[in-house]
Length: 294
Image (cartoon, rainbow, N blue to C red; front, side):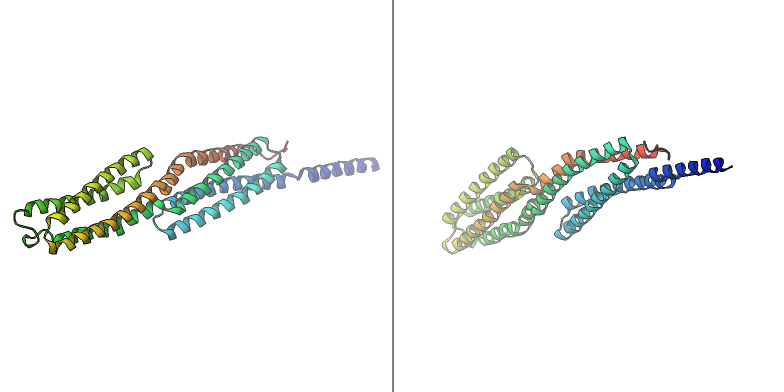
């Protein structure tokens, strides 16, 4: 009887020791379920990170961009926190394939973080949007000022006899040249290729030359009392061309276009690779049954 009791006690002790060493079925279940939850949460936060990054690049106001950047940073922090927690649990469970997938995800996610910093730094410069605002704002106002100044040069009283149609033609040439430059600003701002921008600038320079020659001819053809109008138009043209030069400078930096190209290209590829590694881990965890961890 005593021998039987000793055997039962020894068996119970061995079971208790085994349960204590392995963590027992209940802790293993909890670790597995928590690993599944963390993987699903990582996929959700990765989606949030991608969407917030896209909105930060495409935002048309600083406030909207700021909100998107903060959401992106919050998602990134959540991913880093959950990755650490998942890595700990997978190490305890000794799940090899899941650990490998998570390790690959971490390396890809680090690359994604570096690319995101580059993209957000470019987007923050907003050079294309700033160029667009100048084109539709100051440049447009200066171009209209040239037109308004020349309005007083078209009348019969402002033109020597016989030169009326010649003067009107010069005024029209001046205004159409400025409008051509304005029209070419928009495609220049949207253009990503340097060679294409150079071609647009060549057309703009040709139009500017024609405008200045027309104004010079107007100054000689108009009556003396109308030459002040021509001088005012020339001064406003200088203002317009100064603003135009700033537009081209901002457009050439192309921060918005470049950041959008990165988002639609390299970033999309990296984000997809990150998601693929997480789904690999998720699928492997879904097939796990509670049992021995080795």
